Image (cartoon, rainbow, N blue to C red; front, top):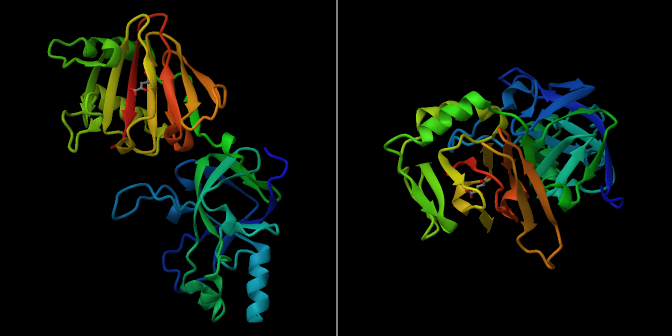
Length: 343
Ligand SMILES: O=C(O)CCC(=O)C(=O)O
């Protein structure tokens, strides 16, 4: 964590009331000393906003947590000559103490306490309930002092008094590794499926053998089909359901790579049509995946590797998915990988 990062402290924590008709009681928030933030879902127990989907797009909602500073609330109170001292009154989940304007944090990552990480993705839109508190507050808030809305990208338990810090870029790459997600029984069944009589094998660069399901990727034209080319077979559908706990999206595109000894995959970033979340499951042997920045300025800048053990799952999101190249160096023994993506 960079020393010069501005620091805020959690002053109070609030959950939305379970009551649906907020018009009757717009001021009611439930104050708590601690809360659990869950990656991709929101605040555990914040029933109305936890793990919800956007009605129009069907995509998971990113409006997980709202934050504002006590200093910003105080400025509104002074300007409108009212008292807004009661914690939770302006309906933010997290009230912070700290002098820096939160609006500077849009598009940045912050860490709260020891683990929770949030991606701030927009300014909050002050609603009519602000005017129900005090006439003119809704308008007064539309000047960068309305607080921010963030998405939980790493889970964690947070408490009143926790320090909140902006994360230096290099700590926000969003790589998650799950050591053992399948077993030898699954591996045996999957290999039998792969070697079925009517399997449609394709040849990828450097003569690697692949099978694809869902939206086909054309290795020659480097494009993704607009509609699914094949169905996702049952064995993969069952696996997808089992692995769903580790994902925000439900994959609809799967590529199985077979690496014979010494096969490899060049440094690349997956096609932009493949969404924000890309995962790879390893079978038959261990290997490593190497990462390097796409915009690296010298040969040694920001290069690192991640072990990919047999039966493990690696999930790439955010900067690691978009701003880094990944590659598999020549493997020392036969390896099969299953890569999951959402088109
Ligand atoms: O084999 C792997 O684990 C990664 C495969 C990959 O990067 C790809 O298919 O684009």
